[in-house]
Length: 209
Image (cartoon, rainbow, N blue to C red; front, side, top):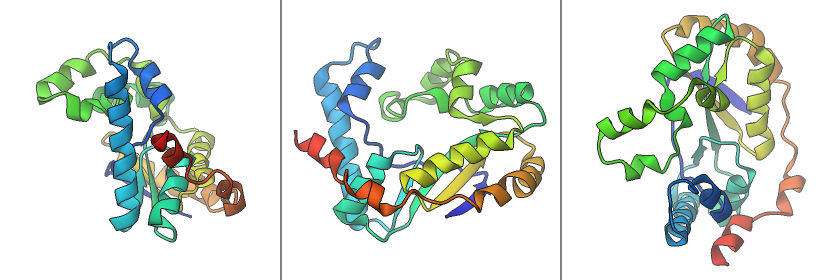
């Protein structure tokens, strides 16, 4: 498993379950047809990626996504996980930086195609709280939290993990990562293919249903 801190943020096909999407949008009055359509498009994108793409890039440690990708033709192709972090010497300042610069981390991915103008994103970002951002971005200098977040991707079946550092202190982050995180990350091991094999293709079965 390779881990590479990088200032770039990458996106991927998403394949959330209809139940999760329905619960997520319960305050937005989104009907079931819309939920099923979004889920179907995510599955179709994932299956196309498995068949035609060179690999998988995902922004959440979704084991079901990896299983579906492999079963649909992606076996043997690289699987990249991308996570957003904000390193600072203290968690409070890291949280403030992440909230100021990267509030989109707490915004649902569907907004990328539902909001037509940048101004609309700015308006939604004003509603995002610091606590909400901290739930999706690892903030501060606790190496254990970084290792734990990376391990979630490893256990889900990803063999590469890319870290997106939010904020101007890139040099401090790289030094912290190389000194305190990377030596522990090298010791991480995947749970093994046997554990994943039994549930392969479950996203496709849900899609067919």
